[in-house]
Image 1 (tube, one colour):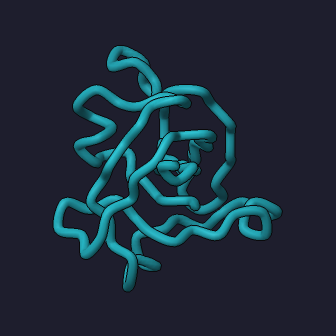
Image 2 (cartoon, one colour):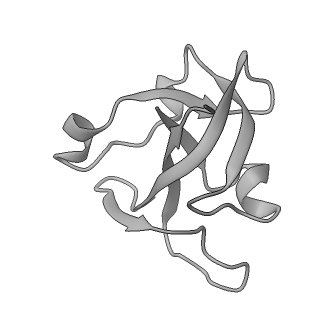
Length: 106
């Protein structure tokens, strides 16, 4: 299951996350399309985004992080697979946010 995490969300700003972390985030499961950036060609065919992290969400995305794809850019986004969100002191120009794949809790 893939969820969108905007780069300004608290889960990014307040500590970040990494592959292997167990998480439980409040998410929007409907009406979140306007929050998504334009996905790079090919990536849109590879992932199905089912939610977006939001403090006022209507559901919860819970599981273990198995993949993180960082999206950068505004009109033309680029995707880079990473293992953890960048450290606080690292600035990523034009970071849009992260696509996070979660394996459901067993």
